[in-house]
Image (cartoon, rainbow over all chains, first blue to last red; front, side):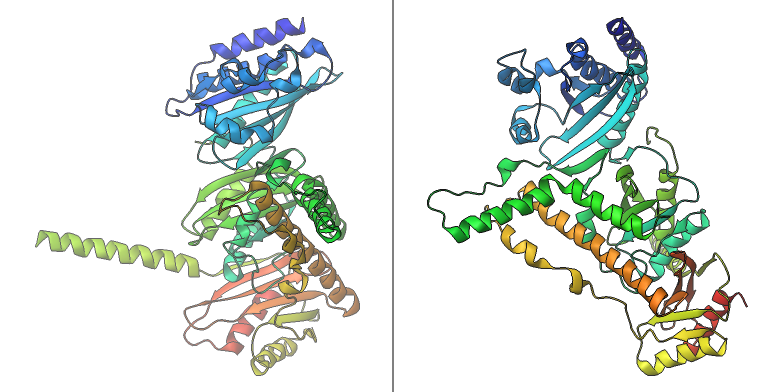
Length: 347
Length: 189
């Protein structure tokens, strides 16, 4: 029965008329792997990529490639029953860049639960880049898949477009925000002014200095972000940092290697744990603080990107790139508009 | 002749646009969540020579504020807490190619230092509040004519910014008039 409803939802998606005609990106889809051992849900491994691809194709007029057209997966898939061989890992992405005739690769996993709901984890890789965007979404199985696929398609559209945007939720009214930015002095006051006059409480974090220690270069280090529900991060793989050792390595060398391994583990492979801890510490210092908003302005301070994190649970609320305006005031107002607007396709 | 007229018009439009953008950036702004009573205990952070700093402190004292001795031009030095020793083991050389995992390691290290730095500043602000008995911290930056002077007041009991003002410094302004202007905004009187 579940299969029937899911396939019905898929057919409905296929019938939705196209809304946009100007985009021309080619999206390649990998399989969405069932992370549970319950084979009852295995059929969704193809339903998810096919239904999301259909939604993207019909609504936004992009070209798509299904998983069975990806030569890489065909070559890798020597045993069709082996899930591990259908899975795409970050280690694979560099190889894939050379072999996939597409602009973007989308792949993922899903985890159904006992309450007829399913959590989908979607990864988006712009071929040839060093960045992979991953986000989670949860919805109901059966007819609920239609709504879930619709939301995922909207997120994908906003991310793939020039805006490079994502939205989990809007920020709460009258919430307390801390702003980290590369602007200072009267310009930082202008940014604060926009938030304060919109009803938000502003934390003095970062604004308790006369001068900003974050310059145009250092703020760029905050563009990549890893949170509980989503990440926009470097393609990370242990194979990229080979720490060579053997019988030839002396005690000191070996000690240094162990130390370097610990550093990589902490800052590259398990960084979310460190971020959870530091955000929890900030939250303990100011229990009323709701969000940290990182705003990076360009040299002329007329274009900015932002990332907003819920400090209590390290959830990435939203991000957007390339927000333009005549001044810090206008750019900040546009950021506030985005922070308070529900998920919709950004035109 | 016609071409010259077009050129003149273009130059005038360009000049007008630049002036408009420039005026917009220098436009004053003021937002006050609450009046800061004149009897409040305040600390003042200003980056000026001591003789000028005294003029500012005296102006606040004259209005009845209890000015605490926070003798600093800025509260903290980022270098104090940014420990780069972690970086020394992560040098790599792969013919100019960047390795995403290594880049990520560098960037995350920097991020964590920034967040820890902000945490240490919050602790210091609490120390200023609890041990030095300061209720509000006033940050001031007084600028010359044609530039924008600004003030920011941090409420140390709520850890919120209660007051901000940008004030384009006038031709006839001096350090005393600018300070008095900000005091009027801060005190609401």
